[in-house]
Length: 257
Image (cartoon, rainbow, N blue to C red; front, side, top):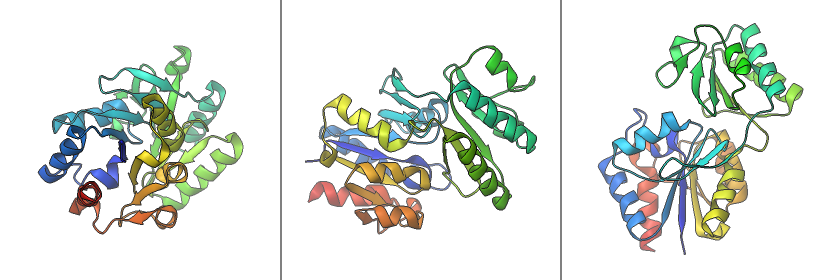
């Protein structure tokens, strides 16, 4: 019996233009009406995820920033994992030396050192040091870089030096969190919070940062447009991509079975 559905957003539930079709909205609401709990599991912060879902009239629980936060339907914080302050400072200093702008998600909001990421974050005119001076709890550090060899090098260097979780949602980005902040780990916490079992959970994903979910939950569906490493772990691969309502079409078959 399915009691919880957990889905990634970008590359999974959302189409390329970040939209959700009427058909997908219908399937989600039908699942919820039948008593199934819907959890959005994303690398985005609350500020970047909740408005998208609410814009389509969808209310659900959230696992945010790759597992750094678990929030309920009302936005209440249930559990969180912070990056060690010294390690967070090391990452910020490293990115600054590499001349990369980045976003910092904290317990008090989302901030960025570059105007390019200011749509969902507050621009830090005086630099990132202000956040350390004000003793923010840092949940995630995000950077985009179209120089793929460079971002791969920096990912490896940060991981080797810090042991932090260093993952990607896209080829050109890097998302740094506590080693304890992974989608699969926090989803398991959410599952226990609601009193469910692993076999009662269905998960959907497409990227590297979804791997931990697939390792924890047996009923896992990788998007056909997803990365090969995830497809190899998946119980099934969807027939349709995120632009073709792959999640909804798969769910409709599962729920009717």
